[in-house]
Image (cartoon, rainbow, N blue to C red; front, top):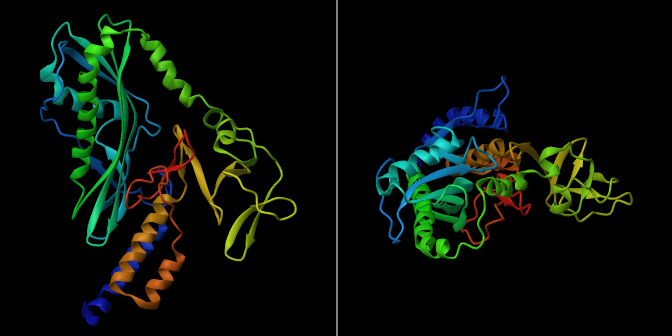
Length: 359
């Protein structure tokens, strides 16, 4: 890019960087700052066909969502500057999924067939820019149950899908990825239908099924006031039982460490100090905050915008100015719950089963 064009872009970039740095980090911004931008992800209403076959038709599919965040489905990028924004469905999560399934598979329903209950536990998307292309990420987890009498249900299939795909602009890929993941679960459901119903040895009531998923939310870390102390494992954190109450947070050179009375670093998952949860990374601590039925990285949105602003400066301005901005950018963490993804997306929240970072 010619030098003259670099110089003329500086004022606009300064305004962009200032705006990015000023954003409130949480989903619920304070009244003092503008509300974060949202990218709405709409699902297709087109009919779909299933590749699996069964001797038993289905009469319908009821969706029940147990998403840890039922309002948002992740983060995406928006505009030429790749500003990080919240990704959200165009309606509430249950209606979002139910409407798509009715539109896609309603033409296959037969009166008197098997009624399907679909429990959706995870629906999350992400985006990441790298080089000359972008990556779209998806996590979808769902389990289906079937009943012929409305009272006794048998488990049919589970799909736990983590994937990414790329392109120059991946915005349109999310709706396709979500629809394909749901279809994978539907195909698996139909493929297992005959055998599962023929060997109905582990039938559950609908209430019993709901109790299974409610139990995953009914944990002290989500229900009770957190106890200050050191949590050596995520299991300790989930049960709200720190192994030690005595610790300190010490800055040693460029590191921020959790230490004992003697100043020796403590190997732990995290700590709670004055009610604030700090995830231990080994070289620093990362604040996380409770949100609905999970914990999110407190400053993810702010830090991601800083990082993208820094990348923009590096490509346009270069040199000391870009370096200064990068230096002020708080480091992001990877979603280490999914090590097979390349490249790893940014971590934005905590997996409430393992304690790892998810997108």
